[in-house]
Amino acid sequence: MTPTPLHAGNPGPFTGEGNWAYLIHGPQPVLIDAGVGHASHLDAIDAASPGGPARVLVTHAHSDHASGAPAIHARWPAAQFLKMPWPERDAKHAVPWQVIRPGDRLPTGEGDLEAIHTPGHSPDHLAFWHEASRAVFVGDLLVAGTTVFIPASDGGSLTEYLRSLHRLLELKPLRAWPAHGPVIDDPEALIRHYLDHRHQRELQVLAALESGPLTVERITEAIYQRLTGALTPMARESVLAHLRKLEDEGRARSDGSQWTTGP
Ligand SMILES: [Zn+2]
Image 1 (cartoon, rainbow, N blue to C red):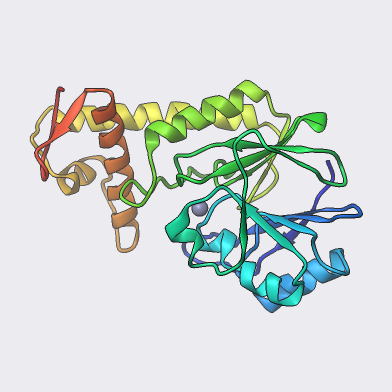
Image 2 (cartoon, rainbow, N blue to C red):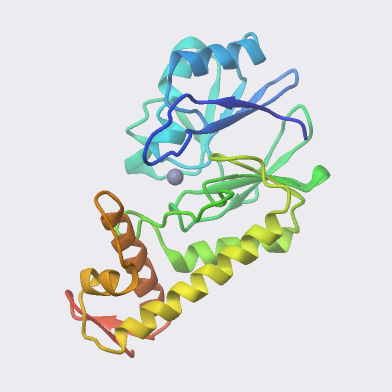
């Protein structure tokens, strides 16, 4: 698998250096993720694939991956747009979406990709697995050098995310193409690092709960010492993600505002 990475041109506080889309060449070019519709991105697609993509496969509905779909549709009206449905979010990106189901095989110029449902970062998240080269397009499942944000009160689930990481591990991928950051040449090592990191964080949450009942805000303050500004709400979402996982497992519970250990 030798896709051409195309930068979406959208650096920012939530996207890091910005998003990567990937073009897989062939008689029917396939674009993985739609960027945000910047002119520089459309020109890069055009340069890599005159005539535009035949199909655009979108990993999930977050706007840095899907909001460029209408601009691509306007420039190349014959392009088809495919993703796993998340209806209320998909409606924000007005193109005629076609449905991908888990296990679907999606043809490209370099062989089929298999759609793997990998929820947790978002409910509609797909990874695209290229068995022939044991490579996988991972969207927002993996980002080298940092962890992945789980928006617990906006469609995220740490329980599902961890399950998705185990699902990826079972594939024994040799390479992962992420939507943010550099190509990952040892995905297994990164996934094991992630699993260890989440386990350590869970132990911190459980330790904080010992002095419960506590609000999410108080637990967050106990775990993260020097949090400032924009990072605080993200840290709270992370803590909430852990609490909901513990709740799923019967190890924590909430009265609506405060959390304690136990079923
Ligand atoms: Zn995302």
